[in-house]
Image 1 (cartoon, chains in turn green, brown):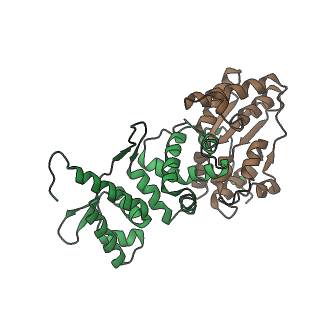
Image 2 (tube, chains in turn red, brown):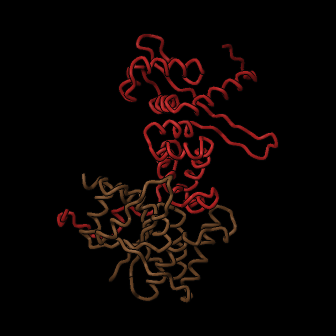
Length: 199
Length: 169
């Protein structure tokens, strides 16, 4: 695939299709997020860390390379792979709304494999619904919104909102700079006497 | 000196089930420090909602075990309670650029309960455990404007549990 300094329109459409594939297949999303986190990895690393069989690991890695979202960084054996940055902004025709598909969303979708709350939420509200929830999760950790406001806006129960916000919290901390807020245990001024533990 | 520990929905969700080490760590903390977490009625309603999409939160187990309880309804006839309710709603609305009347009144129930107990002299120090930073910071700000700045502490529910679990291991 040749690349010019101005990316051809076809490349952008290809990026869009590749990202759409990632969002539809949590196993691929999970692998992409893993490679993005590790910076570089071999297929053996993928097998060990994601507990995939050899054939499955090769097949997923090759699909991501073919889709153009993962690069081979070192062609010597064993080959090393790295995630290409994804930053795709989708804008409505009217230009009044836009959404940027980021590695954070792909990471969140990938966690469907291991997190029952995320899996349930996608089952109920789709990947599109999860994208909305992730926006709220970031805003909540920044102190801009509460789980009750999200519940009101989306017409879900406050408990369901709290559950998905908590499930997405590790994704928010992995991908965004968030300042810690509120007192920690040490700042509580409670003389917590662990030696008197009765449990 | 009497202390009041007010819990929001998020603290109980973050603990998980009674078999979970997070739940057990909070229970041990409550028992060894003789603490009972008080839940505003609205918080208790949220935790016990019948929603097929979410797993049941074991708040009734904690109540049965004696380290959580539900607060009596707020006394809106007390002027400070209404003032604090309005103040928190304005604070949260401002954080998200939306009209104050859109803000859920349950968000304000934590701070309103704190103000009620502080002004009645039933508590001299209040800790508010929440996972909603806007609600926690709003409570500290609004109660400070009522002269209770030194008596209220917003405890981040996640940090609190993480610290407890790390300390137990």
